[in-house]
Amino acid sequence: HWTMYPAPKSVDNGVYISPYEEVVKDILDLNWGDVQVTTEEKVDNFMNLVLRLNEHLESEDFHRMMGTFLVLLFFVRVVIYMRVHPKIAVLYATIVEMAMDFVHFCVVFFFLYAVLAFLG
Image (cartoon, rainbow, N blue to C red; front, side, top):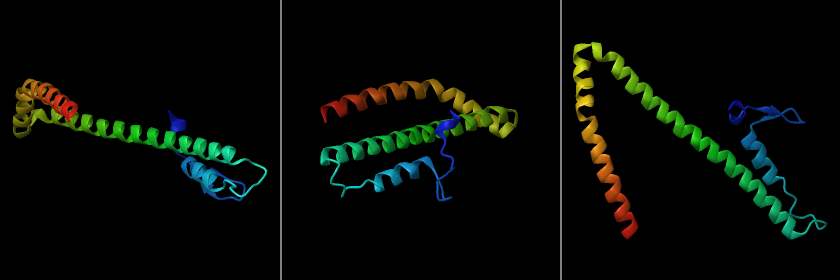
C-alpha cells in the first residue's frame, strides 16, 4: 500500500521529516518534567510511541523481505528466459533436474532442524 512507504512531510517550521522521524521526534519530545502529568501516564505515552515505532519497523522489515523475494524471483525468471542460449540452457537443465531432490532435502533438513531445536 502506498501509505506504508515513508515520504517526507512538512512540519510547522518547514523541516521535512519522514513518518519514522516523526515518531522518534514524538518520543524525544515527551515532557518528563511536567508535574501535572502522572508518571504512569508519561510511561504509558512513552510505551505507546515505542509500540508505534515498532509497528513502522516491522512493516519496513516485511517490505525488505518481500523485495528480496521478488529479486530472487526475477533472477529465476531471467534464467528461465535465457535457456535458449546453449550455455545457459545447461544451467537451466541442471536446476530442473535437481528441483525435486532439493525439495526433498529441504523437507528432511527442516524436520531435523525442528527436532534438534526442540531438543536444544
